[in-house]
Image 1 (spheres, rainbow, N blue to C red):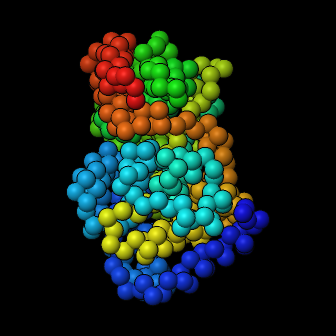
Image 2: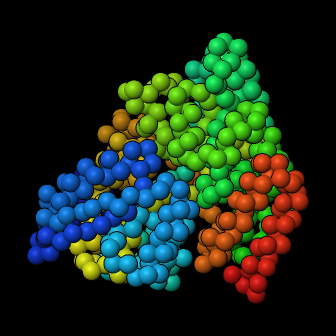
Image 3: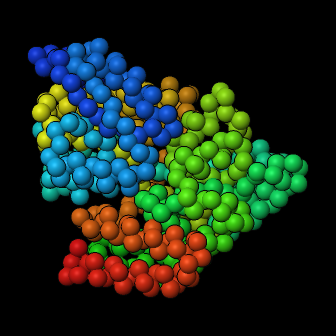
Amino acid sequence: MKLKSLAAIALLGATILSTGSAFAGVTLSIVSSDTGGSASWLRGVLDDFQKQSGDTVKIVGMPNSTTDQFGQYKLWLAAGNSDIDVYQTDVIWAPQLSDQFVDLTAATKDIIGNYFPSIVQSQTSGGKLVALPFYTDAPALFYRKDLLAKYNLPVPKTWEEMAKTAKTVMDGERAAGNKDMWGFVFQGNAYEGLTCDALEWVKSYGGGQIVEPDGTISINNDKAAAALEEAKSWVGTISPPGVLSYDEEASRGVWQLGNAVFMRNWPYAYANGNQADSPIKGKFDATTLPVGAAGDSPASTLGGWNLAVSKYSKNQDEAIKLVRYLSSPEVQKSRAVNLAALPTLTALYDDADIAKAQPIIPQWKAVFQNAVPRPSGPTKTKYNEVSNDFWSAVHDTLAGNGSAKDNLEALEAKLTELKGDGW
């Protein structure tokens, strides 16, 4: 049943911990990376949970690279590791790990209707709710509004315009004394983050989604090649050569020091950039990512994280209680206010406190509406290999190891072999 207001939805959180006191006293473990200081926020939330539940929750630190996280998850789950009770999972992992997680359908039937249906669907595999939505994500183009105003330049609409604007401002700022200024930073390392960035380039050029929803391999086309050649032209000109090793945090580091005109990143970077001690506080804004040409549609890779309970957990009931708490309106609101994370509960987009603390969140609806999923659905359990092959081809192109055309032809051959008789 759909709740009518935030006040009504808040009642859920109050009841989540009011039951189950008979289970108090267990120790639970949850995995977490520390992108943008999220681990510190999580520790505070877990401290509140401990006071209310009587349980103890430990955080098991993880690397920021989602590729490294996924590899570790697979090792633990394959070994039947019972030390980890709750996993934070990327939106693309549900089909690949569904057999290893508890079905949350029955345990969340009273609240599941309050979440975005598309996100719930993405976490449902074989009729099983693999994970409960925690927060969603879609990246945007961050830009220095003060610098664009200084040079009397508009916010760019196409990638070509972005590159020209970036070069103009970068050259001007370097001439004015900031020798460390760059035009554009993004995630260029060979990992899942590059798959996200490159999918946006390709899709915004009208080049498809690597593998289409019907399973057709579409990546080897002229528009996709043009998109990658455009991105290749940035490296060493408007983007530092080191961008080929950047992840989200490395990009944010350059940006937040005031040394980039544009940045592609996720919503969390908005909150960090506006912290009291940030050199760029109040000097930037964010908008939809550029397109290949006028008439093309912008594309932002659908991201987001969810909460899953390991089927090997010795305390599944308590772990489910923790998952429900972390995904509750109160906790999602706290994450939105403090970390600029996009809620997965529809009612929170009308919350006045969130709008006041993070005005970008209501505005992010336009970005979210242009979100494009990675092809984890059609490629099923082979997605990890598909993504690996894709980001490798893209990284080779950006590094000058072969043309985009040649690398995409080789990629098509690899994916065709991987597909075999079917995904």
